[in-house]
Structure formats: structure tokens, C-alpha cells
Image 1 (cartoon, helix red, strand yellow):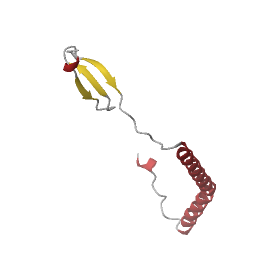
Image 2 (cartoon, helix red, strand yellow; image 1 turned 180 degrees about the horizontal axis):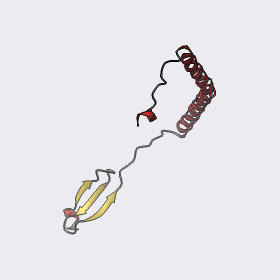
Image 3 (cartoon, rainbow, N blue to C red; image 1 turned 60 degrees about the vertical axis):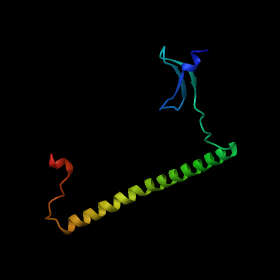
Image 4 (tube, rainbow, N blue to C red; image 1 turned 90 degrees about the vertical axis):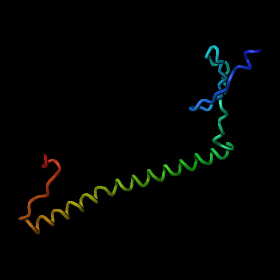
Length: 102
């Protein structure tokens, strides 16, 4: 047991585990994992949080679906506006595109 007194403890910087190391052999003699805090106080709280997340995902999906439905109308209105501008001023050159700059 005389060797057990020579051991020193080190805390792992990554996982906060406690390591007991023998300096003579430079080997880990004992390893004790750090206690992880509980992420959920109760099962009911976890279920309530998951139900809330499902409702949030459903709302985001509904908004995305509505935006996609209106996307065609928005593009049509933009096209009509640009066509109207082109008819009002036919002598203006077309706008430069990124691909034209190469």
C-alpha cells in the first residue's frame, strides 16, 4: 500500500474525469467518470417539451408551404413589373448579369 500514497490525481480537461496516475510507471491506475448533470428534471417535462417542439416544427412547415404557394405569384409580379419597365423605356440596355462580367 505504500505505492498508493504516491499516486496523484489529475482532472481530464476534456471530460472532467478523475484520473489517478502512478508516477513511477506513468500509468493510469484508477479512472472515475465525472457525474453528468441531468438534462431533464422529470419525464413529464421532457414529454411536454417534445410536444412543444412538434408544434413548432408544424408551424414552420405550414409557413414554408404558404410561402412556396405564393412564390409563383411573386415571380409573376416581378416579371410583369420588369416587362412594363422594358416597354416604357425600350432604348435602355438590358441590366448586366454576373455571367456577363466574366
